[in-house]
Image (cartoon, rainbow, N blue to C red; front, side, top):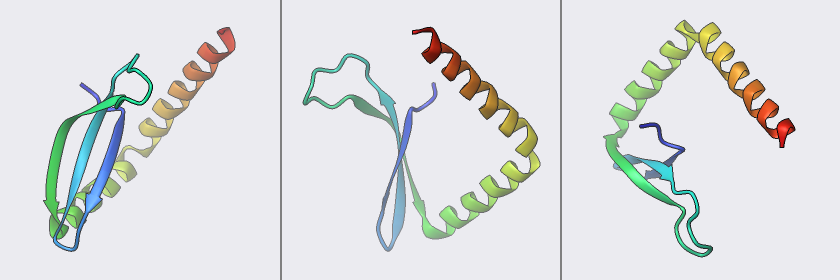
Length: 82
């Protein structure tokens, strides 16, 4: 399962990542998403995660950019069909 949004809560001691799945058709005024996972990290862990994400992006940059371009093309194509 993929999350639709990631939300960050933080304090001086730690950070919490909330992974949110959107709920289609929620009534107006009602929450339209639910937290599907929460991960609490200390700041040293956040720093290590940031380094890991940066190195992964650098290593796979070409594939990531190709995937993003394909997703944008598909999204634009679907919007133009409406």
